Length: 241
Image 1 (cartoon, rainbow, N blue to C red):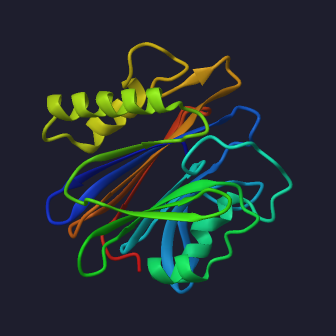
Image 2 (image 1 turned 45 degrees about the vertical axis):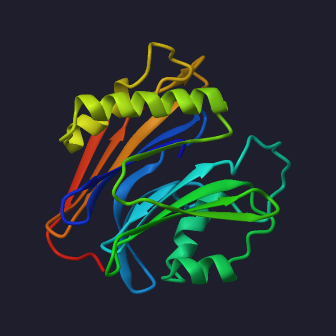
């Protein structure tokens, strides 16, 4: 939920990897499995309390949500709806523009939503909800990208993380899924509070790593539960839509 990387691969494919940085008091998420949403099959890990998620994917759409919009905000509960429901709600619309135009954002804590759409031509849209306005940006699908939560990381740390990512890509120009997961574990400079896999006094830390690797040839989901030290791998050989 708090660190996300996108790396394009051949034939409009991509590797999409997320670290979930959360309170250790939060109940452990359920590992990804296939759910049916609006008549299509979608893979995602599930929060056992709210039933929502921070990342999900099917053959057409892959989405990830990070806490915070453009800048760090003040947490002012109660909120009308949990951010964990946003991705699941998105699948009701089946179109990014329709979602933006019709979704009820008021009463939801600020967030950043990244949406990959593989319909006809690959596209990536970034949506940031500030609490009062929606800010949209289209992301270049041909270039790698990294996002870090604005609620946990200062602009200086986010910029430093971008440099770590650039250094990683320079050293690994043909990186594999395993290389990317390694970066999500070991990227940084030895500052455990702000490294890619982080830990702040064992109260707030990286709880899991989720990766979607999708192309015209394969659909692969990897999930590492770092709390329970368990790994899960799902390989789908047919379309999940």
